[in-house]
Image (cartoon, rainbow, N blue to C red; front, side, top):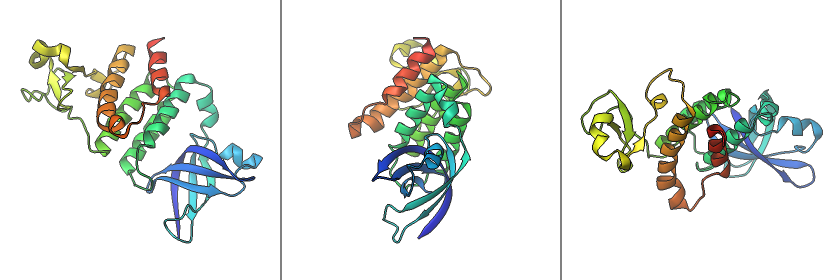
Length: 239
């Protein structure tokens, strides 16, 4: 068996004396592992860095086998990620959340979202904002998407500032005024194009997606939220 695809390296671990097992998130095959012979050589160690985008060829005798990767770097970004704490925390969060997906289960639209995050990670506010949008996309791909298009109570498309923690649907300012303390805040950058998020907006965005990730995905699996995510939130807030 053989296939070729583009992928992003999520992680690498040693295997034996000279090889490594590489974890990719690929465009057409989802999250996929494979063995790289000679992966611990100096030349390959430079290539096999988390965050790099690569062209991969996977071969195995049977589909269910671990198989072998032959990998060529398409875009090397690992060194740039290491220069920014925000980018490092962002990528570590991204990789941890992608591991919630079943292996070998394709998510092509989510792959595009990951590319958008990686393109912005080095930019202080744009990177975290893209990560929040990725978390919304992840929730949708796993069957728990939020409906932020219109007010659940009135159908209004205007002034959407809250989200119901029960239904995951948007609520307008007027409709939610009487019970705003029980609602989650909906920051404008998630519904309005070209809005530059403030630090408070980013905190609200992470609180929103974090609530539903915790409720629907992490708690049922007894999995903790990535520690790097909280570090990123504190960094964005200036803490």
